[in-house]
Image (cartoon, rainbow, N blue to C red; front, side, top):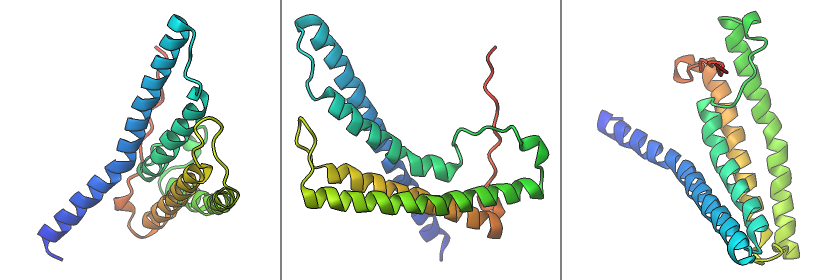
Length: 178
């Protein structure tokens, strides 16, 4: 493969990886705007947005599950490093490989289960309370994002075995309360 094609592929991959983050950002802005409007309407004319709770649940699911695969791939989860002093070098790498592979494999079961629940919601015609939005849309989105997250963990784990330089171990800096 020529370097131009490789650069184009990397650029396309980089742009595609921004889509979930863009979706999460737009949804967060919509949630923020809706919450602000709900508070203003509730306070000024005592007429809140009736579907605000329903929309908040949907928006939160979109934000979390759109962000999950990207955060997972980058290794940016919140971590508790209580045992890090006991692991260094090869032991730390083996721990990270085991965590990624076990977590990726473990995520496959909830992904399959949510996919089944989405199919059942579609079959039953389940809709949201106020807006009558079919519930299977968000359930399929959650299942797909969970599958992608599981795949990201499994690929990270395998890459740490065969090409550890491609998956650099994140250096976590503790939060300072000063």
